[in-house]
Length: 150
Image (cartoon, rainbow, N blue to C red; front, side, top):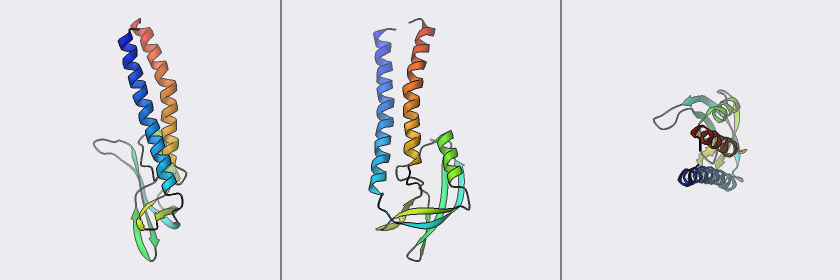
């Protein structure tokens, strides 16, 4: 393998890991910020997969809950955001099926801000991507190098 090729692979590898680690840190930080939010009972009104121009297979869970006699509708599953893709999407849809009674964690200063997943399925999914990238990526590079005769 040439030096330039290895240099480009190293940059790609570091960028991938940097992105995943930043996302993991962000979800961890967001989870810490909301760890003391109170909870109430809610109900999942819709649980499905949605797609748009930039993301495919994004789980969309809609739920209703009540705080101080006022009804709210929520969409966030995790305080750290969302991830698209097979295992994560299926895990969310399985965990929060339509009609299920759920625990909703809400911001006491603004009860319209809420989420469902305090155990951070997002963070678990990101760690899976991190490990996949650190096992699969070097293997693909090695095989690619063999096939290219470098």
